[in-house]
Amino acid sequence: MPHVIEAAKTGRAKCRGCGQAIAAGSLRLGERVPNPFSDDGGETTLWYHVACAAFLRPEAFLETIAAPEAAAFAIDGRETLVHEAGLGAAHRRLPRATSAERASSGRATCRHCKTLIEKGAWRLALTYYDEGRFAPSGFIHIGCAREYLETTEIFGRLKHFSPALTDDELAEIRAQL
Image (cartoon, rainbow, N blue to C red; front, top):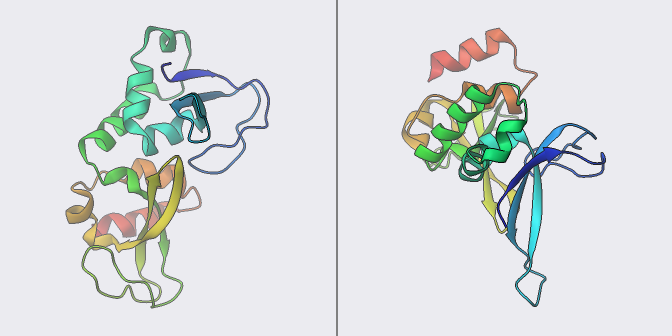
């Protein structure tokens, strides 16, 4: 069964990407995956906000948005989301980058350069997708993003997953890239 975009029937489902509830009536993307608990090879649906799916599950998003059924929905920022998903599909590590924050301690090690990220320095949080779940998997220096992610086009995802960042903070991050 193919993936689906639909209006949420109730407000009970949570987005697999950000963990927030998907409000009743808002658009959501359902990624159909094999059900690990099924004896007969059945499927289950993993629900995402449409924007979260574009950033974190780009292949599923692009496949779904290209389907004729998706044309019926007025998706806010459709072209931007398709662009962001295309970046994620082209750069295999990009969907791992979720948010930017200042290091709360000097104990985290950069997954790229293997050096400590000093306290107060900007860092990108990484999240891995494995068997239907997202798991936090460490950090990288902002300066390591170009090599690790193979792109510096990360500001769409930073604005989505770190909405509290100010314009000044985003400018500081841009300067470090």
